[in-house]
Amino acid sequence: RCLACQQSKTDDSAPSTSLNFITVIASRRLKRRDFIGPPERPSYIKLETIRPSHARTLCFTEHSFDMLRLLSLRSLAPRHRQARFFSAPVITNVPEHKIDLPAISLLGPPQTTLNFDDATNAFRSRSTYQLIRAAVVFRMCRSKTLVKYSNALLRQSYAILGASVTDRVLRGTFFGHFCGGIDAIEMQPVIHELSENGLGAILDYAAEGEEYDPAPMDGGILQTDISARTYDYTSEFKCDTNVSISLQSIADAGNQDGFAAVKITALGDFQLLKRMSSIIMETHRLFHALESPNLSQVKAEYLEKTIDFKTLRQGFKNALATISEEDIVELFNQMDGPSQDGHIDYLDWLSFVNPTDLTMGPLTQFLQVEPLSPAEIIQSNNMLARLDILASAADKHNVGLMVDAEQSYIQPCIDYLVLNLQRKYNTRDKPAPVIFNTFQCYLKDSPLRIRIDLERSRREGFRFAAKLVRGAYMIQERKRARDMAYSDPIYDTIEETHGNYNAMVELLLENHQHGAAFMVASHNEDSVKLTTQRMRDLGIAKKHGGIYFGQLRGMCDHVSYSLGHGGYHVFKYVPYGPIKEVIPYLVRRAEENASLFEGDGARKEAAMLTKEIQRRLLGQA
Image 1 (tube, one colour):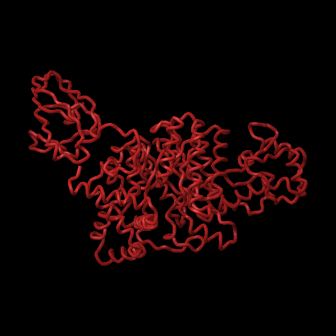
Image 2 (cartoon, one colour):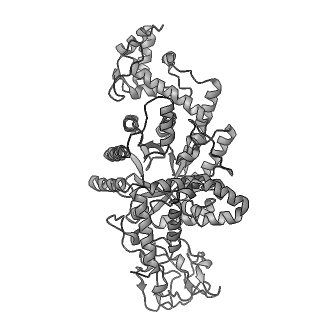
Image 3 (cartoon, one colour):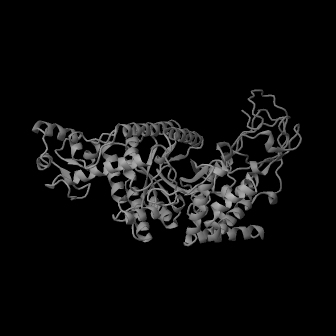
């Protein structure tokens, strides 16, 4: 099948063809629009069709082209100037319809070592326009006044200048820099460019409504005060609509061998998640209380404590519960699980919780919280069904489904829902896990939760899969802790958060041999360098070792592209949606960049952009 004319032929009497030079052509199929010249005799190939790929089979006929001429090397883009060309003498009377060319790379040999300080290499695939746009956006983000009033300014622009002008300005700045496009079709060039540089995409439909009204969230915090979105529950119908949108993201990601992201608050009521989390936390408390006469004192660590039959029976006795000895024996055997080792540990205990209504059989009477009402159970089942629809679609399309972390006081429910999906879809017979949970490492309980899930996956035979982030709800979490007089769930200093993040990376790398897969979703160079160094030490493959890297599109590009050029499995988070409806996301990115400019990482990236722009404009080597 000819890649140039798109026709299948078996005729061996192809016309005579003459050519002086053969070069590497695009990995995608060439079409008429890729050539310059009259339809009957196109002679030049457009430069943008030259890609870092292997040679392809071309058909030389009278209706495609007689001679392939390459424009002068000077006219090539900077990233193509290291191209190596295969030269051939004039060929005449070609007996076959096809000519097979050797595989040649246009970008030269792949990197063997990472260097995040080399601006030329990091940005070699980016056009000068893209670099200038990035520098302008970063400069705008440094203006605190502009960022503070960005939402109001955009509203005024839409009202005065209109959608056409405002959208054009946004495309040339924030939207073009941070987002992939308005829909899946418009995203294709972005995804294609990422793919050519060894990067994948995490797709997320980021539309949040035409009017962005930062109404107070739970705890009196504005949505603008956090760097991640929390969905407002309006109706079950709206949740079903969000499922349809996420299904489209999954289908689009499946065409690119990537990931899709989803938030549980898009699929169910936030207040229901709080209720379910409070019940789950009450089951935790009850587990730790069984040795205490009053069933209230918290004792040992989750993974260290076990309950034997005597302790369980004594717990019922201390609570003056009316339950027979036979029923206690039956309950204990059920909770002891497959091991039947005579002890109930924390994982056995949690496995006994009914996933539908969060009851625990005879133990439900000891939970000091109201059980779910019939209406709440219906909502819960609907939410579970929506999640399973998305998980099934991700499994079908070979897409990783990343369930985002949210506020700590609804996270117990999110963890529980994700766990049930991982049991079903992250089986060890699959080449890669499907369902990824997310752990925010600024939370003090994150090390324990990760260890519990690792042990649970090992014991139950499914694959642990997670995304590690630092966290996005600090202002809201700390205000709520102060207002409700409970201990702050977040580490006191950023240094403690960095230390915990790196420690969790080490822990998961050490568990790699047990099937643990995870994404280092970080803009922190030190964490990325630590991960790559430990991967080398442990002999973990760059591309197929189950270790991924992730950064937001438009941020930390010098790290992402260096990783991609170096052969690592790296992804860019690519939001998309109608421009006006993505404004809330753009506002948060502007605010996040403004805060990041207080650190060394963003300053370094801005300096590298400036250096590379100057080098290109001045024609320096």
